[in-house]
Image (cartoon, rainbow, N blue to C red; front, side):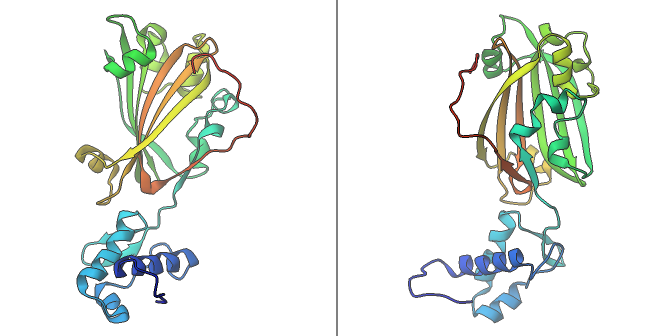
Length: 261
């Protein structure tokens, strides 16, 4: 491992960088076993703790996974590229396709742990949707599993005054999903706003997303507005940060004012 006099980074970080570069170059491919602690100790003349920390850096980044009794292996899960703008286009859900198909391409996507209930809205959601005093919401909870790996938890809130009696209140909303049904109800979403932040996961999120130790989650809160500026959905999403690349593709032209924004 080449070093320079001014490289003052800890040894474990430099070893992690070398291994990351080796993975990126294809020296170690998906499913390959990385050198173990003993190998790294011998190659770099470091203590066991230093070798363990180096492998821990890559594990926490989601680049590798530890298999008990077998070693540390390059993850063979290909990150999901979330194209936020393309996936919400009307010609996607308006033609009966799921917005998630933009992300998944031809990969196996399963939606499970689906729950649909009528509840009082959380305070923040109540305010965003501009609900009247005791107005309730339809709550849609589900988990998205890609290639057998849980990657996303989503909870949508929609005013019951808008969706009562529609397919939105059933587990299967039909072709095009919730947005297609809202359009049929006269509340077509024409504008979306997403807020993004990150944090460490809760114990429940670790279990439901099968997260490796130290893996953070990305939180995306999306609000859907009609052409008249009425908010008709708040969708709170929790993403496995190691499973996603967030992609935004947009022009640099002047931004038009949008009702409700």
